Structures are given as structure tokens and as C-alpha cells.
Image 1 (cartoon, protein in one colour):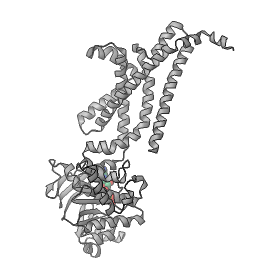
Image 2 (spheres, helix red, strand yellow; image 1 turned 135 degrees about the vertical axis):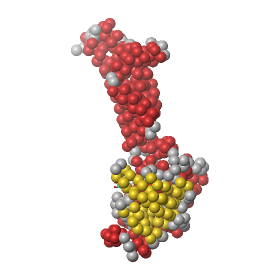
Image 3 (cartoon, protein in one colour; image 1 turned 90 degrees about the horizontal axis):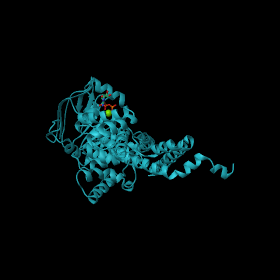
Image 4 (cartoon, rainbow over the protein chains, first blue to last red; image 1 turned 90 degrees about the vertical axis):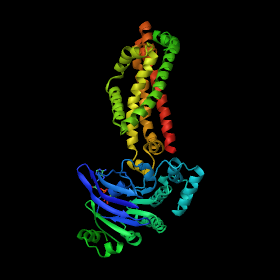
Length: 240
Length: 225
Ligand SMILES: Nc1ncnc2c1ncn2[C@@H]1O[C@H](COP(=O)(O)OP(=O)(O)OP(=O)(O)O)[C@@H](O)[C@H]1O
Ligand SMILES: [Mg+2]
């Protein structure tokens, strides 16, 4: 579903990605872990072209998105993204946050879009919040709306960049629960996270990133119980 | 002092008798202001967006325009347009037209900077969220960024409009008969400087104050929205 080949990305003189290779199969949930500054966010942002790589290729569903000929707006409609700080539209209600893109981009009618949005709100457990503005939602609720907003475009892949790290501890569970449901429905997911419990339970595969490359990858059991790389071992000993 | 002796003051008589004449000037001042603000907002929105565009040519045009009109005195711009440029291109010696064009161009340059700053004050994550949903830059601007920027730009824009109203007094130099020019004409007839210029100042003050009150009203309504 996603294939990343020899990806390099620098910000000025700072080389953040130094040749990343990975594949994500359809319906697979891949968790990306690693120390701060290792390039996890950058990798995710390259996958939906919020950052342009300097070198290397990314394919989504067989289409090379790093090629200048690709219509990136079309691709992004198939790749949902959930941000650490939610980035909900503060001037729109919950419902409008979710329906904006389907109406403006896909040309859905108001009624169709509302129907999709209400369905998604039921799914994330927020039917009673549809006419509320983001400022009136808790962090956990905001993030669930953000997930619903991304899902409303019916993406084939969902990218999550530390979706729970800006949340108060008591709200982490409700967001992870929604993500877990999504995984069980067979959504292809790439999740940058510090929630090792989630990675172990829901992830099919774990990528450990450090210094701009993928140092080690394997099943959650391999990575968490029997890491081979010394860096992986030292990182895990600090976070678990 | 009795009312009679008060009314015997020559300056007061001049001002009372010519008050309608000054008010006509104030109406022209308002006309120039309103038109300049309307054209200025359109110009400013375009130039402000160009200034943020990736396109080098648009960026250069916007920067040159903004820098020139912010970097030279309005007084000189009015003289240059009226005596130098307009006669060459539209063959007019109508001071009203020249006044509106000069004030619009000047207002547009300041508005452009306000617009640019307002757009940049919207959190970067908003643009990223919009783009990540598949919106192109134009869609993201219209549906996500500008509706948020507009609340940020309203207060500085209202200040700019008040500045425009005061700055229109400079067009007296090309004899557009707005409030200041009318004051000058009265003065050259009656020489009652304190009374005439005092009245002119009060009329300006009332107009700017009314604009400020309107601005407060709009801001308060937006805050409760
Ligand atoms: N737009 C940018 N301009 C300059 N440097 C950047 C930019 N974005 C990221 N960086 C730098 O790139 C490096 C990797 O950043 P990245 O956000 O990918 O790390 P991360 O693994 O997601 O870390 P964290 O766990 O803290 O989120 C960091 O040193 C960061 O300062
Ligand atoms: Mg990050």
C-alpha cells in the first residue's frame, strides 16, 4: 500500500532522513517509535507531501507520489492525516469540520455529507457534539473529531502523528479505542506513537527509527521482547 | 458674556454662516475616504495574497508596490499622480479622481501588509490540515485561512480607515474641495484662523470618533459571535 524507497530529507544543513526504506501492506497497522528528533514526523509528513523529500521515492497504491506529475491533491484525499495538535478548524462546528472537505472537494450534497458525518460521529462516540465549536470540546473529543474529519474523505490509508501525546492522561484511552476499532475494521494505518501498549496490542509491525533511518523493524513481540539492536534496547529501557 | 456679545464675535459669525459650506467639504472628504477604502481593500487583499505567493513575479510586483507606497510620503504621491502621471495616461485634471486614485493606492499598500500579517497569524497547522484533506491552496485559503484571518485583521483595518480619513486632507494640495481645502478657501477670505481651523478640526474629530465607535461596535459583535 505504501512503499518508501531510499528517502532523504534535509532542512538546510540538517539531514533528518538519511535513506528510509519501508513497506506497508494493505490492512496493516505499522507503529513508528523512536527518540525525539529521529525523523518520525518528517517521514510521515513526506508520505502525504507536507514535506518534499530531497531524494528517494514514495509509492501509494502503486502510484509514485514523489513524481512532479502526480496530482498531490488527489493523493491526499486518499491519505488521511491526524495531527498531534488536532488542527480542527476553530470557526466551524464539529459537523462542519467533518463535512467541509467532502462538500468542497468531492462535491457531496449537504445532506449526503451530513449523513456521512453523523455516521462517523456515532463511530467516534460524539453524536451529541455535532453543533459544538472546537473550543468547547475536550482534547480527547477534539482528536476524535479530527479522526472523523479525516475518515470523511474515505481514505485508503490513515497517518497518525503522536495523536495522544498532547492529551491529558485520562483522555488517551478514548482516542486509542477509536484507533483500535479502525484497525480492526482493516484500515491501513501508520502510527507514530509513544504508546507502547498500543503498539504492542494493535500494531502488526513496529519500526524503530533513530538518526534518520529505520534501525530495526519487526513484530511487536520481536521488538519489545527481543530487540537486537543496541539502540533499540537502550531506547526501550528508557520508555518502558 | 451675553449671547448678543457672543454673536457679535466676527469669527463665530463667519463659521456659522459658512458651516454648510464646510459640511459640503466634509461630505467630499467622506466620499474620497469611502471610495479609497473600498478600492484599497480590494488592492490590499490582492497584494497581500501576492506577497505570500510562491510565484516570484507576483511576489516581486506586490513587494515593489507595497514598498513604494509605504516608503514615500502620500503628499508626494498625490503630487506625482496629479501633475506627473495621470495627465499622461488618462488625460484628466479632475482633482477628485486623482485624490481617490492616490488615496486608494496608498491605502492598498498598508492594507496589504495588514492582510499578510493576518494570514500569517493563522496557525500553520490550519493550512496543513486543509491540505492534508486534499484541498488545493485556493480552497484552503477561502474556506479555512481567510475566514480566520478576517477576524484578526478587522481592528488594524479600522485604524487604517481612520488614518485614510485624516490623510485625505493632503489632497487639498491639488485643490480637491474637501474639508481642508474649504477651510483654506474660507481662511483666505476671512482670515479668522483660530475659528475656521478650529471648526475644521472639530468636524474631522467628530468623523474619526464616529468611525472609532462603529469599529468598537463591530469588534464587540465579532467577539460575541
Ligand atoms: N520545518 C523544519 N525546519 C527545520 N528543521 C526541522 C523542521 N521540521 C523538523 N525539523 C528538525 O528535524 C528533526 C527531526 O524532526 P521530526 O519532527 O521528524 O522528529 P520526530 O522524530 O518526530 O521527533 P518528536 O518525537 O519530538 O516528534 C528535528 O531535529 C527537527 O528539529
Ligand atoms: Mg514528531
